Length: 137
Image (cartoon, rainbow, N blue to C red):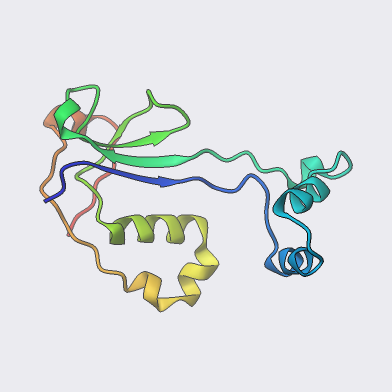
């Protein structure tokens, strides 16, 4: 039984090439050195990515019509998109890798094979009338 949950994804604002990062580490440089080099004034627009954090929350104690028990936050805390139920770790792994890392998703069967558990629906009929996230078994 899940009592409460917060599953978040905070995308990196800069792409980090593993090969380049390994070279920086071998030279004794830090992550800040890497970031400063990649976000220098000459290439900041090419390398800086504006992306929003994504957070799935389940908070039944604070549930009401405009605060669904299970919901997705995008951009800011007042954005709450109803979600069918609390997510299992499998659902979260599938969502993140399938949508944000499709090359890894396609290469790694262990990501695709991660099992998804289903919990009882928490979404109300009124919330189902609005844009929401659903998932069938």
